[in-house]
Length: 445
Length: 167
Image (cartoon, rainbow over all chains, first blue to last red):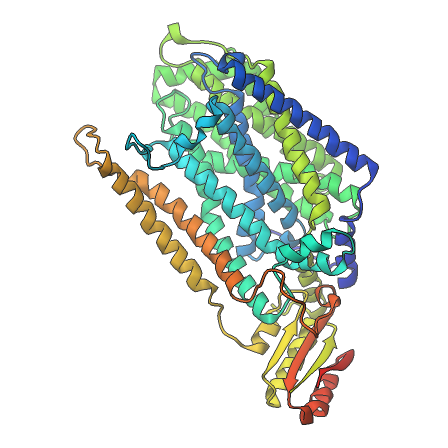
């Protein structure tokens, strides 16, 4: 991956103040935006309350399609999270220094996406109050959870992922919270004082901090690969045609990074514009993220193609029927949205000029988000709606309850991200300053 | 005992100041830095952080408890499936793996906090808010009769400001 060639032109002082300026009292537009998102979240909560009261019949879920929008959203949001960990952990281990300007935004996005994703298994349970049945706890029946089930693997994988990504975000934030504490004059000073954990940037603190970041990166790297593999096994371990394939784990991991990178671009472009961070988050960053998108889009395109090839080559009529149904059956529209958005629309990104065009990147990234949501929808619904027995084929249409909760999930994600934006530094102050000093002293690392 | 603070502009200068101070025999010093710096760390010379031990212990605890928990639970409610062993090691490896990461990560952070971070710690006397912004502080503890020597060394290393904090 190409390094950022030009050194940052701002001084350390400017970097510090420019990033912390984002924390200044918000504009009216921001407040209105947060309130609007809160309203949408409220609508989603009302829909969930109605579903909880009335029962699962209010959703479109019924035999044979028992997994629908909720599980689609779950996989989608877990996938979105992956780019953050890729940027913060994997690129850290590869010493790809350009990540320093975008890693905080990506990490924050990871945490927001995981907390959004984690809601969906709960929503999908129906009987919300029984959520603890998923945990191995001592009970009067002497019964334990089934550790051979991919659904239980998922409980462990997603909870671990949530915990580690929150810790990772927080550890990275400590020096920056201290920087905010030292510049802040309002009530947040007390909050930062507690959250900074007594950080004063001594050599001893940096020494342990650097080691902790290194080890967390080392732990998060296999974790990020495992999480979406485990999510893919929710499907691949089942005997449903269209699901039961060995390529699912790498296919899902590539798709996760693909969609996550797109989401980083979708949210960082407006943030960069609104807060004038062009000096720090530059066109080169979008260029590099664009390269990731090109790579992962190609892997995803290959996976789409090879799935059809395997169905044909297997000579298995059920597999073939499932894939014929996928491309030309009831859900042809969803499949072709998926292929258009994920394979065709990202093609211009092979051209550097397009990757350096922030507006073009933003538009393409939104299409990728849509395409990747539909990818999960296609996999889940086409598989289930067209299994072995023709008498048990069916068609699934999401109800308004599910669609409201779908919309609310985006609002929930956006709301937390906006709140984060104003409370904690969205660009890593210490790491960008590190780049600045390295550029000044000729890269002493 | 006295404390002398030198304020420097870059990590390179701070590292050089530490180097010359240590050479002159002043090793009781503290550097405040807004950025992580290998140069400063090497100049101060403390060796690898003990946080790595925390990670190791956490990881080993995680992998052990992952296998022990799943295997014990399988035998606590034994189900015969096709005459296979009750415990299914390949499936349980996933749980053990996730717990390795979970415990390893949590203990890494606890280790980092244990070594050197105190919640709501009082600001050290020599500390300045600019040390999280764009200035590096080099604080030296010395005998009161050595103050002028330390001041000279700090000035020679390019300090923008040298000040006696206590003494």
